Length: 393
Ligand code: SAH
Image: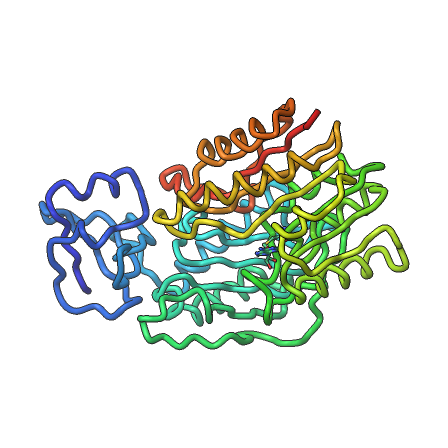
């Protein structure tokens, strides 16, 4: 077994169950682990403290267990996945009649750093973000089939864009179990085509489910603009909520196709909806002031800390345009999914935009990611989705 020895004092975060070891914390390594192999971590006092997947990069080890006697094998994966499923069942997200779209495994939030598994009806889409999860994918798929039992038939592996390319892993997207093209899933009674073959993330933004449900409650009689609509999730909920008119905008033509398909699936021949393939900033510049419910759910403006300043500017500019144009008495749902931007920074950017417009703005709700995307209390970095619902006078 490979052993990673930490520099003196560098075990403190692990003692508080933080699941990462940074490369700078390592004094030496016994042996030459390949990327993705399991290593045991020892303090400078030669005491075992944790074990996990090794990787070359700033995060050198992602911790899987703090117990020396726990072996990382199929039984380990089964135990962990069973815990994840039990949690989703006990909080009423899994095994519902009206919903078969949920996140089963949320990386660090489920003590499985580097692994994401989303469930779309009979298909699980599995995504590795670390070399270790990639190497262990077959054992994980075996465990997943067993734990999910007759809930799923298919496991689709989708990691071509999520693994460090330097690791020479050459992951191929494809089915590890089953197959088939039936890709319609249900979220709170609404139907969605899930494009796990080509779509972003695992094919759908499962993390906005509760926020979409909240939006539905505000949609009645309103004129809605869903900016950065992707699959049209918010638009479909707005339609069910009784919106007078819904416009969906995304710069990607593919996203507009998906949105139109999802609207047609739920509301065939309903003329309240129109989708536009256009850049957000251009659309906001030229649009009329007809909307009284606007959703801004942009992609992560800051993927890294160094992009923070520009990202905050981006949020400010975007929100300023919405404040400028939204009808009096309008409601703005505004989000940031950038991990590098914290809640306060995002709120300050939105505050600055509001002040610029000079309008009275009240915060109605402060939103975050849903319970099937839990935050490990020892890994606060896992809280990434931030949202504000604002009433604009
Ligand atoms: N709200 C969506 C998720 C949004 S993902 C949901 O609930 O599922 C972000 C979307 O922004 C992507 O679909 C991407 O194509 C789109 N996008 C990125 N840059 C854009 C731009 N400049 N203008 C308009 N859309 C953009």
